[in-house]
Image 1 (tube, rainbow, N blue to C red):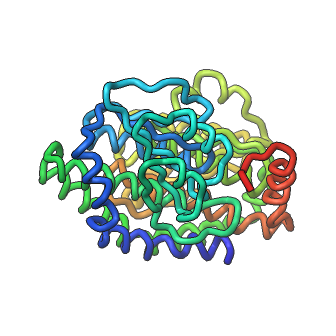
Image 2: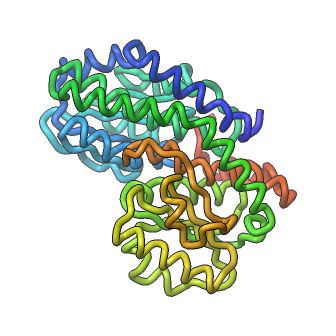
Length: 359
């Protein structure tokens, strides 16, 4: 199995999880209603950490209580009288995650993993399975998508179950997720075609800045990670306003760009387009991603570097749409450059010396 294979599995997995959401979340709903947590901590690193940070705004919107997404090494203390800790690790064997689980003994801990046999499951009082199936390669794709979706469903179903979430908000959210599910396969098709049209430019990347506002900046962080893991080049993610305050001064011909456009026409969106256009005057390796209905407002209407995807129209489905071009770049371009698998070899060498993962 390859990254392309796993990317292609996402639409079916996504739809199946939506259809089976009651069964997937039943145990969690019981725990949530019984314990009544007043603060939630999402503990994760790597791709799982990026998924947690991308999901956190939606979880706060649904639960209407604090949701903190932290790396295990940053978990020094927790707040609230009834905190809930979700320890998220697709493989369930990250050394820093196991250490955090042991340090947090005495708190309500739920292991969220894709591996039923992981030590993390043993260390926690409760376990939840990420419905992604096996992903037996280093750079994760469907694990990112399905971790976010699972967290969304845990919030929606538990909020409805305990009575804190209004039925209309629940139905509104599920409807948007169903629209995203219906558009998933087409968006994968579009991103694959887009990468094919831009293979030469993408293969020349030696540095990459990824820029977006709001949740797109959180998605950009996972995009940067995928690029570093697979293309083995420096990549940095920025929230747009922070990008303007210094990082944009370091642009050069060798610095590529990837800009996420907002869902709706806005002053902020106009500024992002202007910034992308300015960057294109410096480097030809600058790409733009927006929703389909924004095509007429493209900075370069027929520029092949512009990618327009189908969108549910809701901010919280953006991770399932906007991550796709970065996943696809990471799946295709290393093979074109003759470096496929080299990033994983590098990680294994580091793991052997530092023990990143428990054997």
